[in-house]
Image (cartoon, rainbow, N blue to C red; front, top):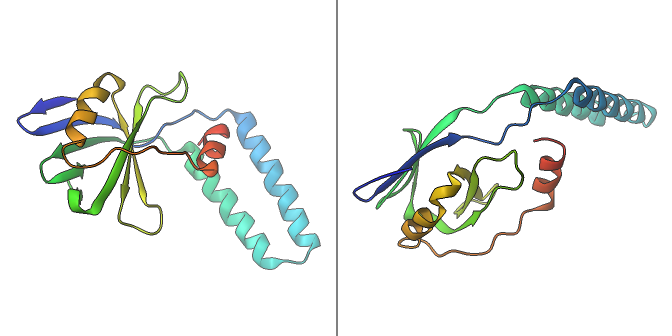
Length: 160
């Protein structure tokens, strides 16, 4: 992370990636087949369609590797890449979390913003710069505790 004037800038992957072993896909496929059989037994065509779409999407996402993104904080707000901008007025608070496991090389900056669906931005940040990042953010936003939703814990447990 570099500080130039009143700007903090760093690069990090867009999400934590875990390499999936063939066994992961085997188990996922077996679960999908069991759910499909149950849906067919129940004669629930909508559930069958949902399982097919969800399984295909999960397998595609499991293979997707993260892009490296550039993050910039300045007196106007947060910029991700060159085209995503969040002004301070749209942001409510932040939380900083240390890495969950040894596989995570980055800490997590969580920012709550003014949005009903998925109201949290989760950004990787270099752990050695957390104090500097906290000091900068406190100029513009309050820091609050963040409790990880159960769905995030499950996603991390299955490798997402």
